[in-house]
Amino acid sequence: MMDENYFYSIEYRRTTTIKIKRSIFICTLEYVESIEKAKSFITRISKENKTATHNCWAYILGEKGDIFHSSDAGEPSGTAGKPMLNTLKSHGMTHIAAVVTRHFGGVKLGVRGLIQAYSASVKNTIELKKLKKLVQTINILIEVSYEFNDTLLNQMKNHLSRIKDTIYTDKIVHTIEIELKSFAKVESLLSEYQSRGKLKFNMIL
Image (cartoon, rainbow, N blue to C red):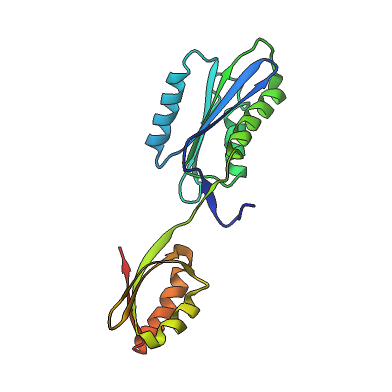
């Protein structure tokens, strides 16, 4: 079940094929980091399927999915690109590009039929495997005494993504990864302890 507070993408390219009234719809999804990468992917898939009737596409980018574009690529206006885009959005996705390649089978689907076909093609491909939750993190280096370590970790557990590394010397030095959205609260907590001489910390850039 998806958490509405996060966005999602995929790790590796995934493809599915469906057949509707003799037309074949092949959806290919890929993780993309930029508009340039999205356009390059769309061009590549379209060239690989240059004999297809249509190569319709959509992409979403940005930390909050606020950059997006789509194309009907010759299908009737609003019947392909936008339904594809809306399906990506409904699954909370970003950093994602989709191309649906259609091989026309001789039977017209009509406006409603096309919208349903392109939406279903993308939906099936999204749901093929579990999505990857996109989480922004920041690393913090914390130097703490052995005596105060358990107290610190207990206070941090609600914000802790993971302890990436720990070095034991005369002090304990943790490299801790936390979600960016928790940073303000964590920084406030650590600053208070630092002012009391309980630990030292700094961000790793």
